[in-house]
Length: 187
Image (tube, rainbow, N blue to C red; front, side, top):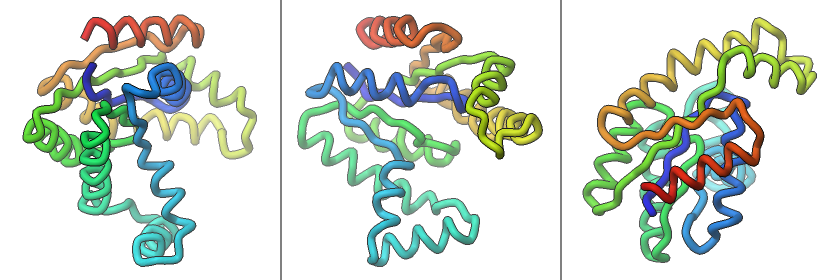
């Protein structure tokens, strides 16, 4: 097994697959989600929690140095436990990806990327089915455009520097999971 980095467009089912993989392989994978980590730290009344609150409330992104440092601490913890990592929501930029790839190489760890591919029309349908007030066709298109503008360069860079598998996520949850597990077993 290798360390896994999940790539996606919103509503591709990545979070569901991450949960299924870690649930079925609890002694193999350790799950890392920057979103989960930041949400838990936001509730802390300390320097880190206050920094995150200020950045988020002012509409700023969390600095790469902070995010990368948190990831590095997580990686060493996982390595000490002998587990592999399952990364969800990180990296979000090419500089973050460069940091990860360099750190993994330095520690003789090999990443495998999984890109869950979903046609734009399916993404739009899934988002509209949620029936949230903020999921207007314009907002949905903006999120799709942001994926191509910000996330696709990260996926492309990863593809050029490491192994990347693409999995059709326009399928049943069970078939997507089966394909995910087959991909993990073959790599």
